[in-house]
Image (cartoon, rainbow, N blue to C red; front, side, top):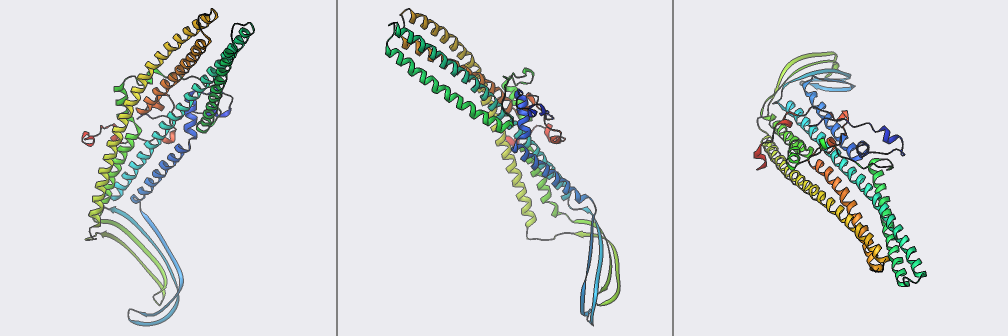
Length: 446
């Protein structure tokens, strides 16, 4: 598992007028994400519970004290009839010696739950990074689309002026002028829709990243860290995907829980030292002092079969955890294959749409020349202009969708943050469990 640390984001947070790379946006977004912060709190809470469980290894010291009025009529059958001011002071020190391995298993269980929460934290960060990639790329796409829509409006304005001049010279009719005017209105409506989408995405970006999007930079993937084959993607997903690590940690926690449930099958041994320093106890004036050192044993001979049924329930929870792992494995493998297919076919679409733009550009330029020579109608020119606009817009969509598909593939493989060189904070660091480098038993997947 990659061990990383979140990049400093002071530069992006210090001013809203500074350009932000995608990597900086991801780092800032993860650092400010309420969902990530919530999961980090859950992780720290589980670590604290594990430290609490380790307290069973240490001596337990209890101090008691009391003062009050005591009235005694009889003591051991002897009439006393005495009222005294009772005082009690006692201290007990106990040390657990053996409890059927409960303390060890409980510490292990909470440790695995902490691992589960930590991997869930990484999974949240991975998904947050993908969401920011989506917003960032969609924002770039929207900016290009707005520029394209504005150019389309300007082209229609120029066409309208050209037709007006032709009408004044008697070379075109009023119906031609009306037709171009209608197309111009449609182009302006498209531009307004593109502007509206752009402002919506800017608001979404601010919500996710925490700063205004200014001078966004078209990202370029690091070829050395990008998944370049389906087999590599599947291998990375099986070995490193945080969701699979969560499921494996839950399986390990269920195993430890089963050990915890079996501790009552053993006797419990502890060493206890107790001392009391009392005054006026049981109707007798004067001090009452005692001290004892004892080896104590507790063992339930019969409790209605509750311990046996608890152990059985823990066994079924382990089976449930195995089933969840299998479902996660299949979902992640399917998601990886789908992401790979999307990237592969979108790469082909980008090439096709580029050819479409080139052909539509040539066709439009040819139609304009032919229209001026009287060999094409105005409708032919306007239709070719729309086709060119749509071809360019399709190319922009495909280009950024392909980039997003690449990031989605890395996310499916569980390595998006690693591939972007965006690091995890030091507080997320922990030694990976022993099972993290051990392949899962194939029987679990059957």
